[in-house]
Image (cartoon, rainbow, N blue to C red; front, side, top):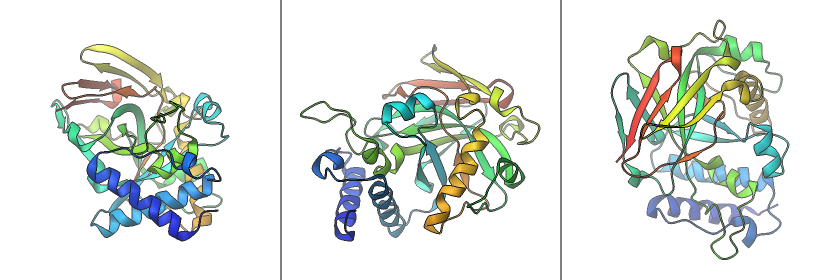
Length: 275
C-alpha cells in the first residue's frame, strides 16, 4: 500500500496535468506494487485538491460496466469516479451546445444514462428497488472521458493498467445532459431501462448504437453497486446528485470541429460540438 506522502504526490501530478493539459506517465509502471485501493486513494486525494480550489461535487460515475471491458482490464467489477461542477455541460433541446476542446487533453465520447437522485442512498445493502425509489428521474447523458495519465506508455506503447485509470478519476472529465425537453426526465419505474437505446452520430455519420442492457443488464444495478461500494469509505450518494450508470457504446474520439448528435428516441436528443 502506498504511504500518504506518495498518494499526495501522485494526486498533485494529476492536478498539474489537469492544469497544463500535459499527460503524465503510468503510475503503475513507476510504482509496480500499485493496487486498486491505491488508485482510489489517489483519486480521492485529487478530488480533495479540486475541492480546495473551489470545485464542488455534483455526483459520481461508474465505468468498466460491460463484461468485455472488465475482461480486457483484468478485473471482475466496475470502477467509479467523482463528478465535479466544472465538468457539467448542459445542452438545450433543439440547440447545439459548444464545448471548448481546450478543456481536455484527448477527449472521447461515451453514450450513457444518468440517474438524478431525490434521496440519499447509503450502503451496504442498497437494492435496485432502493435505487428506483431514490431516483427523481433518468436522463440521457454523454460522458466525456479523458486521459491525464497517458493511455499508452510513451516508450513501450503498453496500455495503462486499471489502477492508473482508477487513480485518474476513472478517466472522467465531463458530462453532457439535456434541458428544455420533458423527454429528458424519464420515470425510473415506468421506463424500460434495459431497452433504452441511442444512436450516436459524429459529423452526420452513425458511429455507435447501443442499448442500456449492455450496462450489467440494467443500469440501475450499477447505481446500487456504487452505493454499496462507497459504504466502507464512509461515503453515500446524496440527494440532488447525478450518477452516470456506465457506457453502452465504445468511446469515440473527438477533436475540434466535430459535431455530435446522440439520439435517444423517446428520451430526447443531445447535440454538441467541440470548438
